[in-house]
Length: 417
Ligand SMILES: CC(=O)N[C@H]1[C@@H](OP(=O)(O)OP(=O)(O)OC[C@H]2O[C@@H](n3ccc(=O)[nH]c3=O)[C@H](O)[C@@H]2O)O[C@H](CO)[C@@H](O)[C@@H]1O
Ligand SMILES: C=C(OP(=O)(O)O)C(=O)O
Image (cartoon, rainbow, N blue to C red; front, side, top):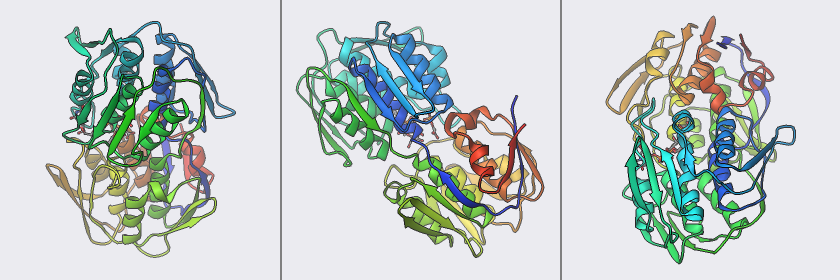
């Protein structure tokens, strides 16, 4: 199995191109089920999760062409098989995003329950309740959610008791083809949801309130073809910002947007890192020592949970103590024991961790159980003395395209072995 080998201690310098956002591309691909298309998605990343979503849509009966050279996905055709099988849903939770579009367009879907995952239990009750409010009837059988709405979905007012990115996306897509008006209250406001809404509008949907926590959707009879550019990946950008910061370098993140990274940028500045907006993207520079800072993860526009592990790696070598509180997922500190093996001083209890900065980390063989925990070990390895080997590289391949190529191009000593 592939591993990543890093020899730390090299300040990064140069440009890193930021790809299209994984977490925008996955729902956008699911939206392809809402029309015969073609739906053309520009700036598509080449990631394992995108291949999994492609396999899922293809087994539903759609045609999905991925032109990797042109960074373009073209989706067309209509689903014939309405079942999302366990093997694919288990591999990638975002597979449940096919449920809303399938029920809305074809009146039925059978989607495997995803089960828990490394970062938490992650139930899908809000997705189910919302579709029930829109008239779908659910049976749970053999580990599958079987939803039926033979007469189609109807608009409803859905008030989310807690903010959910996936449930907002599923119900937003479903609402575009429902009869009448759907109101989504306390909706998630992540940039990926705005991107999905923009694409749905291009396909002919009628949506108001984009960018706010109240989305109002007027259902239409059918959606059509569209071409949509995917937004840049703010988590990939944030991760490479931490790479520049932890190595004391200067990197231009080509294509990254300040508007998506407000809370991360504010925290980096608090730690003594310079962040400047340039025409081509964001420039991250760290000249002096890092200072510790406290962080609490929250729904957007708060600090993203998908940046928590990377930030913790940074705080391991910052001066003073930092308190990191994870409020979104109940089990998202799996990187702590591995960072500790590299010499970090971290204590955690419940949802909070205290990181006491040390002058140096030391390289070690490490592994993690999820995507962002894995990349936090890469960041720690970039700063550590000696060699770090990161195992289970398949986690990284879910969300970071050409990670080792992008980092070695700016001076890191990193390779896949
Ligand atoms: C593919 C994708 O875009 N993944 C992102 C998405 O995941 P995902 O859409 O799964 O995350 P949610 O926003 O739905 O989850 C937030 C919280 O709500 C809970 N919850 C969610 C749905 C539900 O029906 N019931 C329920 O209790 C979850 O267990 C979690 O504790 O948003 C997360 C939070 O920003 C990110 O970390 C993930 O990277
Ligand atoms: C948690 C993540 O993804 P997923 O929701 O697909 O597990 C992530 O991108 O960090």
